[in-house]
Image (cartoon, rainbow, N blue to C red; front, side):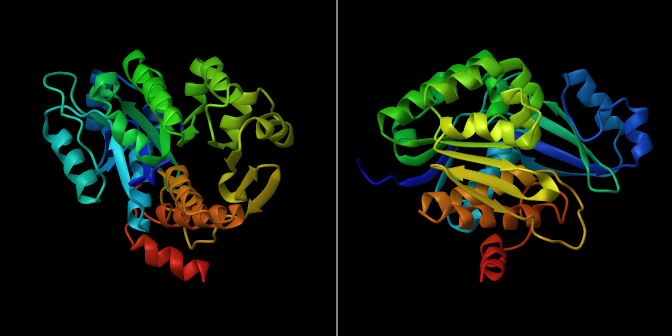
Length: 331
C-alpha cells in the first residue's frame, strides 16, 4: 500500500453559519427546539434570518469544521461537498482553500442556493441551529475523485449528508474506493434525528465492518443502540468497531480501542460562549493524533483541548493558533 498524500479527506455539507445572540424568550417566541438542530426550507430560512439580531457569517458544515481544525494542527486535508454559484458559495470556497484544504468540486449553477445554518446563541452558550441545506444536498457521485479518496489515510463521513439520495450514493461510492485502497473510514452520525431516519443503514455499516472509527455523543449513542444506559450502549457498540469515541459534554469523553477503554475529562475554561462545533473540533483533535499513531489517551486529550478552544468563542472555526494552543496544554 502506497503512502497517502492526504491525512484525511471528508465528505460533508458545505454550509455558511450565520450566528446571532438572543435571549431564551426569543427561542420560545420563534417556536424553536432549544439546543437542537432543525432542518428548514428556503421560506423558513428567510423568516428566521429576518428575526435574527446582528449576525456574523462564518464558513461551517460539520465535516468541513473538522478539516479546518485538522489543517490548523498541521494535517493535510481534502474536502468533497457542493456549493452553488452564488455569493455564499464563493465565500465557502475561498475560506476552505485559504485554510490549505484541497477542494475542487465545481459550484452548481442555478437554484437551490448555497446551504446556510442560522444559529441562535443564548446567554449560557447553548446553540439552536436551523439549517437550510440547499445546494449541499445535490452532491453527485460523479463529483468524487476516487484517486484522491484512495490517496487519503482516512475518509471521514458526516451523517448529516446521508439523508438525501444523491450524496448518500456518493458516500457509498467513496466507502468502496477507500476500502479498495485499504484506507480507514471514520464516521459520525451527526444528530439524533438523522439516526432516527437512517438507523438501519448506520447499523449495517457498523455490523459489516465498514467503519473503523465511530464518533458520537452520548445521546446519539442511545439513539443508535436503543440503550438509554451509557454502559449498555458502550457494551453494544464497542465490539463492532475498532475505535469508538463517545463525547459527554461537560463530563468529557470515552474511547474504546481494540478493547482498551480510556476516559478524559473536559478541559476547564473560563466561560462557555458558544457550543457550536465542539464535537467537530473534538473529532479534529482525535483524528490528528490517530493518523499519527498516538496513544488513544493522547488522542482524546487532543480532542478535548480543541473542543475547549471552540466553545470559548462564537463559531465553529478556531480563532487562536490551534497548534500552539494544543502544544501549550499538552506540555
